[in-house]
Amino acid sequence: MGLQSLTIFDAVKGLREKKFSAVELCRALLERIEAVEPRVHAYMTVDREGALVAAAAADKAYAEGSAGRLCGVPLAIKDNLSTKGLRTTCSSKMLEDYVPPFDATVVARLKAEGSVLLGKTNLDEFAMGSSTENSAFGPTKNPWDLGTVPGGSSGGSAAAVAADLCLGSLGSDTGGSIRQPAALCGVVGLKPTYGRVSRYGLVAFASSLDQVGPITKTVRDAALLSAVLDGYDPMDSTCVDQAVPDYQAALGQGVQGLRIGLPKEYFAEGLEPEVRVAVMAAVTRLEKLGATIVPLSLPNTAHCLSVYYLLAPAEASSNLARYDGVRYGFRAEGVSSLVPMYMKTRAQGFGPEVKRRIMLGTHALSSGYYDAYYLKAQKVRTLIKGDFDRAWEQGVDLIATPTAPAPAFAFGAKTADPLTMYLSDIFTLSANLAGVPAISVPCGYSSKGLPIGLQLLGRAFGEVDLFRAAHAYETSEAWGQKKPVL
Image: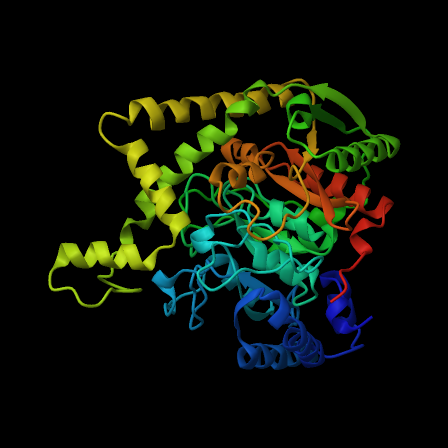
């Protein structure tokens, strides 16, 4: 096994024990990227020179005894997180040449701990999509089958981890954009509690739903990254000032005494039989490990899709109004006055899916429709959160569901029907609407050898229980140890 196949935990251990240097580790990843990236297209930008400089600095820190918690670990960043001096495109023509003058808080925290940032990963344009087919610069391919999608919108981040093109990555999750691609690519993906991680420097899609989180090879690695990413940031008014628990200490506690709810609404029509079988086998395994499985109903689940596709586009309509060609980003040519410049810039700069969601959101917020659509959706969102609150009040600690209704699908299979594409996130939307944390872990493979994910949802700021249960399940099975052949 080459250095590029290491977990973050093993890489840190090897670096501290001087089994290899940070530069050697970085070069192994860069060689892997050079060999595999042309087929996968996980990256928008690879910062080879910057990564080698950071790796050399990491080796110096180890020699001086000043190494941080992630010193020398090669990571990738979703290309909607600001990186100082390194372009941040959101996979959109609108920001193709934009170079931020500052780092997002999560990026700054990784750098402060000595991480080596390899580059920026591909995504659906402005994080709007479930397959990474909406990138203005071409789709990312699933390492398990290059003819299938990696999921989205953090498809590049998930594919990079699965293909050993980085040891871990950051994604953003607005309606499942970390967990769904993690499931389709056979890796671990965590959406933290809303307010647990700073959004400062994340290019906004839907501000009441967006969260930044890790995509990794193991649950332990997700816990290691979370320990660095989590915590209060005064630059983000939604970030909660709450102590970060010792996630590593929770990993060995097992699931004995945990009550895990099994909501009937997540096992209804539309779930592929192979996914159902794999997820139920995982639930059975958790029960054998000591958890108590509790039948559960979350009756407002049926409204999640409708609520999400009113609220998220409405917020996107507002957030994306700033891209008008005036101050930064793409500007259309051949116009002589302001209003035509606005119109032509946005028409040329945004792709079809972004335009669709802006129009949906603008309509939902418009005079005469605000109460009927946006306001009503907010009220139903409260009902959805109430379902989860009642589950916790009944003594349920976690909730187990499929992450996605089906394994990875072929390119083009759903692009002609937006609703069919939107249904790819049917099981992940509720966590964002309710603000609760959720994690996806591999739990099997389809008959075609494509990964299947188990989703666990927890109480607000209950990441400790998520890590505890996900790690117990992961270490009792060998699903996550299998690698795609490239």
